[in-house]
Image 1: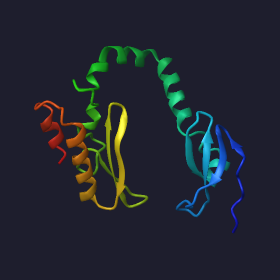
Image 2: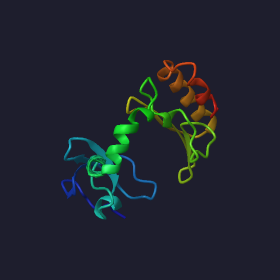
Image 3: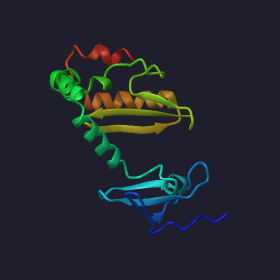
Image 4: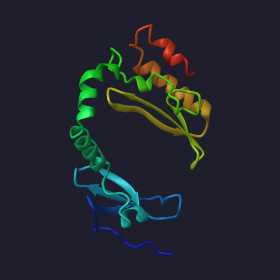
Length: 167
């Protein structure tokens, strides 16, 4: 079956500029799109045509910022508790502590059931410095620990036990 040519078509904030080299796992064609904000992203045909993907992610960020700026309770909590969300080095505690949602047993490592792969992640100063998918749990843990050594080496000795708790 031939893919419908979407080049030049506009879907919400996305304009299709080229076909991606690899198809999606479900066999749908994937397209390189230019977002109104200037970023590019790759989206499969179904998500484009059905309106499931509307932007590169900028729309979600804008909506979230707008909703939080209109939420008095959030503004009050942020003003009173902002320092409690990060440690003295500016690292989010969510990157240091194992939450109840963690099922892998290691901080910053998760399993994606749909793909059967493991993801190692670490956010530092508001940016992902590690966001890598690998086939084994051991390799994901190793990547996370290497990233911790690289980016979190500034942590005080009192923070170290929290990191080690997930290992």
